[in-house]
Amino acid sequence: MRVVFLVLVCLTFSARGAESVLGSVKTARGGAVVRRGAATIPVSEGMHLLLNDVLQTSGDGQLGVILQDGTRIALGPNTELTIDRFVYEPVDGKFGLVLRLARGVLAYVSGRIARFSPESVSVETPVGVIGLRGTHFAVSIEGT
Image 1 (cartoon, rainbow, N blue to C red):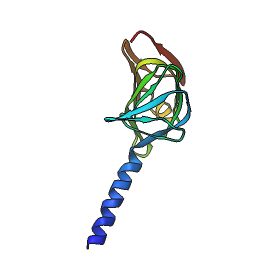
Image 2 (cartoon, helix red, strand yellow):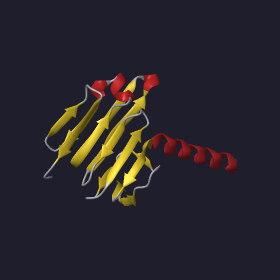
Image 3 (tube, rainbow, N blue to C red):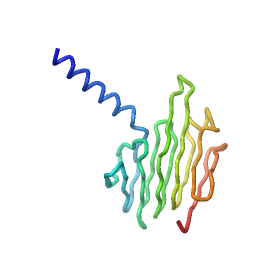
């Protein structure tokens, strides 16, 4: 009985961990960290990204990220981006992507979420919200 319970608990935590991975870092140059809860983690190529991760680059930092739906994101120097929402459940018709750019430079190339449900993708900035209807864009937020 104890063994079965332990196996079920382990499987439950493994499934939750696998579900929460929404993308990964493909390229990292210069200074970059991920703030995850109270932890600050140096970025490395191949690092998994989770919901509510805050990606930050320093003055010499650059990041390239790919999400599970194929969305590609590039961050320039002095950038802060939070992954606020990521829902990619095509079988159930559920889609959503919300990125919050506090400062810096962001280049975006849409993936399958934007292809299937463009109205469910947005990028929030300190001065407004960018709703995506196309396939790519770039934005720079200065002075924040």
